Amino acid sequence: MYRRQALACAAVTAPVGCGIEPSDVIDAGAPASGVKAPGRPETGVQLFFYGPAGLRSATRPAKAPADPQFALDLLLDGPDHAERQRGLSSALPKLSGRLRARASDGRVDIGLPVPPRKLDTAALSQLVCTAANAEVPGGHPPGSVRVTLTGSGSRVGPMICGGDTAFPVVQPSAVPSSR
Image (cartoon, rainbow, N blue to C red):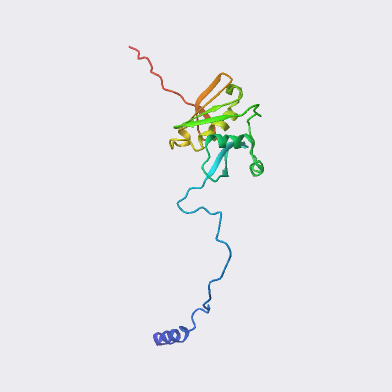
């Protein structure tokens, strides 16, 4: 009995459907933008500034991967308005001349207009981590890029970026055996 009633109900309501009328294509404007295309990495420049919890990265949009020189030039301009709103600031002093970065396979050499030994750990970390996270030849991960800073006859490095600070590269040395 119930089966006959269900079939009768379905026969009556089937032509009605769900009540949605067919329509033409509706023009809704331009396609979505600002969304990352699947399979394509986002392009941005990672800069390192200081915040309440220490060294923090800030990513700015870029049309192409940035080399260390471009990234460091942006870093020297300081945090933008949005980054300052997040509490980020720079530990770098105003430099009297231009900073020059030269990148090679897994290495970045930064020439400073001041002796790098005069910079504190915070300023060194900003420079090293920003340079290491830029587009460096050789495809090395940022944590293995060696950064050396020189200026006014002094040298610091090589150093690597360890996430929230820069560390000197420690070369293992032979330990004399005791007999």
